[in-house]
Image (tube, rainbow, N blue to C red; front, side):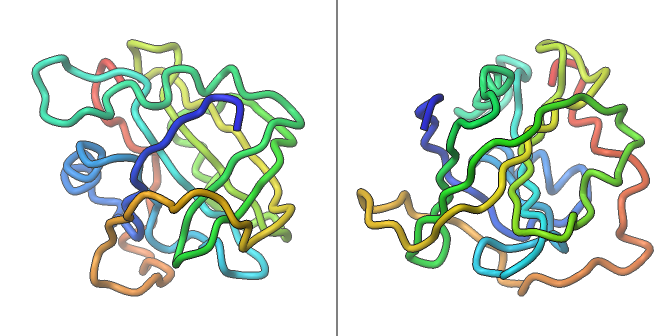
Length: 171
């Protein structure tokens, strides 16, 4: 993959901002209630910091700082449940924080990567979408993933975000 980012994915992170921020100290986060890589359809929604407070814990504060360098045709690899899933980027765009429709399924198996832009602000969200092109690819052993003990499920209406998280003023 183009950016050569190897980072733990914290699977099934609840949309609660405090929990999300703690999980972002450990890697990037998959939004609970969105698709999973092993599903035949769905939107695997993953968010990571583009910047964050230098004094905060965690070593992934700038993990998605170069996400804007991904372009159509670039590939993204996700490790999940002992398999590697390969996705090909097909679009990149920005949204306002309240545009939560980017969390929804689009009728095909995709991954959506999100971070705040411009780097150093939380004004907008950069969205990079890629369609699944293969799975169970034999590659180097994937990094060990962390996950919550809860199975993936669609959040109740009270947990459905009405705004994409404002992770901090420097995100």
